[in-house]
Image 1 (tube, one colour):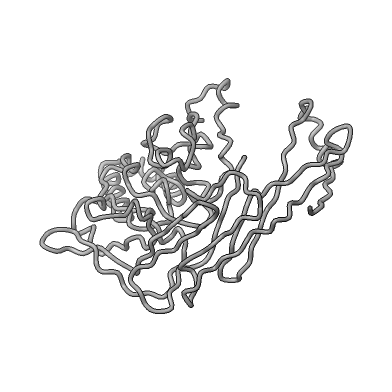
Image 2 (tube, one colour):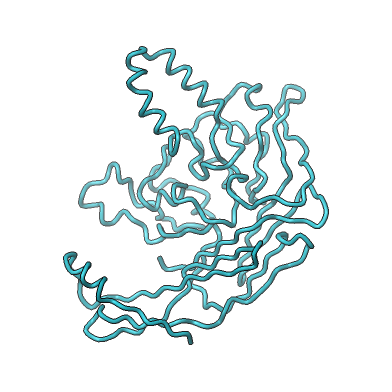
Length: 329
């Protein structure tokens, strides 16, 4: 990983009830915005599915559970009823435990970009689309509309909205799973996706599929950005550590929250890695802002290119012998 991940945890807040609010994180020249709405649901009007007006709010948690995504329980129930109808009872009895295990965590019918969200609709009949909770957190350039609501075929999930967030990105979500060479159904390495079109991930973020790769291909499958843990748009080239960070729409009094990151840069002296001690300059790998408690957490790390390869059998002894001394500059 050769980048800084920036994470912000908190809530969208307003000093008075509003139906819609923009929350923005500014860092350097980067602007990351989320449009926050009050609770909404689907309704039927004139035979067409529409979105209800947003309810007023003063606080909405900025969590991926309220972004676009999730699962369509009604569709899954329909599908399982159909499977039971056409499957012999003895076969179904043997298959049920494994199917239940698959459907409790990761499975082909969840939204690959965000398995925890809401608003993901696969069921076709209009009556099953009414009363659905809609996402409260959205990207301003990728809003969900009634025309985009019903997906139908789960393999066409790439045409749906990207979820919006400031928090950690689920390692089981797309495109992170693609970086681990475990792309979801419907995606083939090299397919065009909006994340790469916008420059949020490299064009080659998915280098293959571990389930079909040959043993010779295995060492090349893991992408260097697989360790990225921030939301799409909040991974930066290594920061210096003294940048100005500004947050809007996250204070109950309507205030802007701004501060400069600490300018001090720690150094590490590593003993036992090479014949002589190695002094390294650390770089910020993670910047996390906990808005509610007004806390800043920074994780620093350093990299060193070895002069010679380390045999696997040496690793346990080397780990025990290596020591790190921190100094702040």
